[in-house]
Image (cartoon, rainbow, N blue to C red; front, side, top):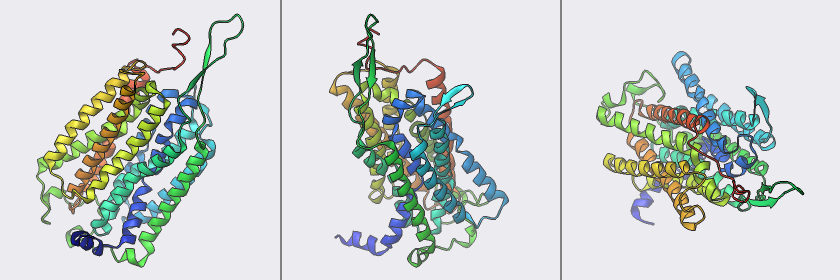
Length: 433
């Protein structure tokens, strides 16, 4: 073990790192878990290929959480944040256990059948995730800043671990066409999807257990002596909680942390654009981009791209202070890759190299890279704001939700109210369609 690494480990409590990581894991594990089940859910859901667009919009409705929390901070006592976190993690755990048994239940909403149970429980889980952006991350400033990276990596693992479970689960293979032509009738085929190794019910139960462990980890952060010993007292100029809306703008503080107003706004704008793509537009069109290449390609894309972001975030232990120029260059690459996968989705049901391994490799690789590089850029932005004693971390959360909201509304309109994206059926060619 190198002297530098030994010094880093001796300057921190590994148990607190683990607790912070598990606390971060509890932020989006429910929502990410539903997303990695999409290759299975879109085959049976009423909404079919449009289900991702509905899910993305539901996540944005959950921005009610940050709004309510902001009102709470402004008008009520600001010393009870930990009770809110207890409640959010507990309700999230219960929602996942319920989802395991009712995810396929439907009902009529505004005259049309919808996957009501799935969408409602996803709203609850999204409420937890959205609120975490403006509550959980700033709350970690109550601890020494070295634990913030552990928390952020845990937040990234909220996509990684469900993806690992989904990879083990599998999708059973590509769909098969079975001839169901009746005597004297026209040629007719039906699409049948092979069964995975275990059902979505088992998958959601496993995630419910995982989120409950995250709940216990936060209790450990609050109650264990070793964790309480790593808490910090904020400077006299910022005695209030990190989420205090009356704190001075961070680029005007005299704490030694410096960032120009222009760079401050630029980084927040970059965060908003990244989230517009990653949390809004791209997830909504992923089925159109990947399913024409087969169910296995879609499964690999969803699971591996969900793992790419957390893996990229692990570089935060190596690249402690990324340069703004580097983040800008990576942002250009993200925009280029985003344009590529959008183009492939627009070409559905007949994208380039549809029946070749080249097409599968292209689409899977593009999705992995776009989410991986985006994850690194997001971590880089948060890292630059981390020493900010003011509202920087709060505003990154606001930028995250604002960008995601704009992307979700845009993609929902494009997918459901235009004819830009067309679904694909593997049996259509056999029936001459």
